[in-house]
Length: 387
Image (cartoon, rainbow, N blue to C red; front, side, top):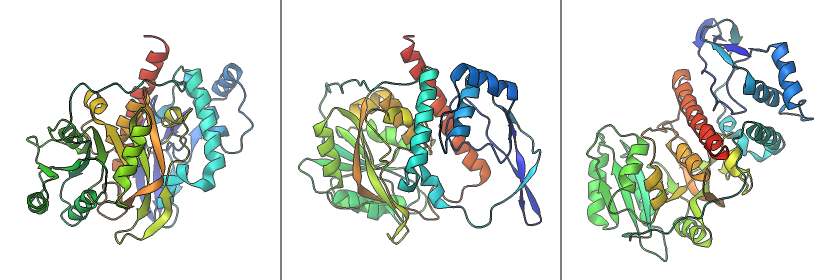
């Protein structure tokens, strides 16, 4: 199987379109091969002879074939533009990023999940629904929960996020930890002023200057102020009501979960709902969610973690995909609880870290998640093989 870079044709312009190398973790059904892929007929025949015919599916046939071929054959990327293709008209479709959680795509996604689960079984990376119990914590915590807000240069939105966090109504003590990653736009002054007004707000400025979002999370986790559970809120987003934190904690109390993930609603800068609206990840199942998580690019928000477990695991010090890496690592061993009602308003605006990405930056982000999946698949194979 061979694919190559190509040129985008846009009017009279010809723009180089680089693609990522294929690796073990490049198992997304929407991995970008470009518009042209070449298959070896002998490799197809060998794969189908060994692993069975393509199932009777409507959407996932090519995906099934690609996965089967990749078990025994390398997938080659030619890092040179060998052809040109016309660029689709119009702006990028934001809904495409959430196609795997769009109810209209349920039939195709179930096919993709079935094909992918079969592939994981063939390569010894499938995990049956057996989970470790969350261990008892051998030390006390200063609060039951901490809302963690990493921030850098968000003076226009961070006060709203902090006040949204502080306004939560709970039957337990909680605090808010803002990790201010050396902001230069006035965010630090905003946070200092708020910290003087609200004792529950802990304003942390790291001693290090090389931290990404994941590194800021580690600063909060290992802070003396961190509660038994650490709950995410981005510096430009808001909880959708005063009971969001309580609902998360209620689920932690009900089961042996190392992580709880809620649902969120996409809104614009003025908090008006935008398509596709609610992102609830109902594709997650207790039986197969931890396997299907390797196929998709995200698990949802808001995310909440058992602090003791995350102190052992830690976040990668990056600013993209750190949450995905943590969730994959957790569900390798532990249960993840899900809340399917909206707890969170996720604002899409020009200041988002993933807004208007160029091809090279989008490729870097995708390659990082593929790398995370590669490591996770290898770890699961090692578990299953008793190594």
